[in-house]
Length: 436
Ligand SMILES: Cc1ncc(COP(=O)(O)O)c(C=O)c1O
Ligand SMILES: [Zn+2]
Image 1: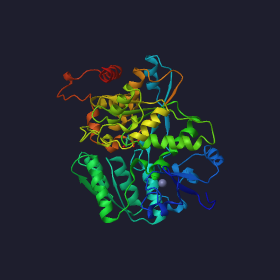
Image 2 (image 1 turned 60 degrees about the vertical axis):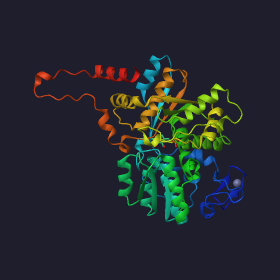
Image 3 (image 1 turned 180 degrees about the vertical axis):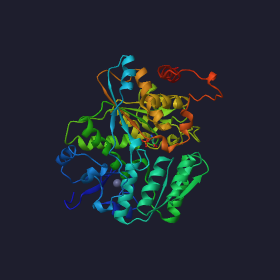
Image 4 (image 1 turned 90 degrees about the vertical axis):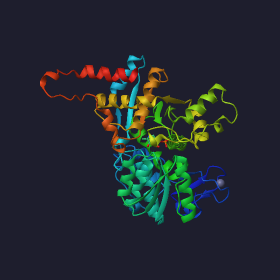
């Protein structure tokens, strides 16, 4: 790499290098040699500096500026995202203990991100900053919800107009929020695939750059800083990683960080446990089939497409999992597993988190915790392991979900209808509801 260049993009397919994002966008975000849209970023920074950064106290993921694809700090667009706590939730460890597993469980609190309280904020901050640096004024993106809201807000802060295409089952509050920032919201009749199609047509017709989806280097590069943060806080990699999966940016970013850092330290990919609900589970179905057939040659290309998935958790409604071929190979590499959970348990899960942790999680985060509970009950975790739960969102994304979490509200007109309370008994009822 030319030493004047802080970073360059390398085509994953043919290895061709592109010198920066200005050139990458001038090339229509693809490789001029082979047309692939999948590129990864390499840095000229000295990785010894990363060890020094691990000693610091980040205010945001921009703490890792030397390892991010931006030249000038003055272009940073931030709401203080990506410097969130990794908390040990001991009540989950007690539950694991009762199931015979003596492990440590940490929760990565994306609900405390500054922008929109989801794990999409770092990507939106990276995108708004890169676009400011290269002078982009218009952008478009299709999203099931959280990326839409985060991009809507951050691009508005950078005064960049965004056209945002969402499936009709997206949460109304998200659409209203994005529109309130001055961005265009298009609620597309149909599912996420239909929204993607209209967005692609819009990009072609109006010559507006469009997000490259889950493999987008902007998203992957920003999100990989989560690994830097875990190493800073935990001083090691977790053994097990749990996440609700929709498009797959999380696992791709995790793998990119591990490959990048493995040249400089002893590090390997944790066992990934990726969770979907029974209402939209194309990756779980594909994986089960592959397992049954003992992973035949090309198994990763065999996956179903679920048209109009009937999930109420719209942000996890990727019925056509285009990244499955990449994610499936990673899962094989890390000896991971896909977990299917019952969507009708989402409220019960969020109620248990509320009473145990005094924290309100969003529905997609409840899916992630349901996966953890399944992993514990079915012994997919072993004693001595360190488990990291990447919970993606707080309740702000789905404000009406809070109404579903009330369970002890009694309508009375006099004291004879009241009784002395017992919080321990209430906890037992909620745990029983979850586990039955
Ligand atoms: C809260 C939350 N959890 C999980 C996911 C799935 O993320 P990924 O792109 O890694 O599949 C998303 C995004 O779609 C999300 O917003
Ligand atoms: Zn190429």
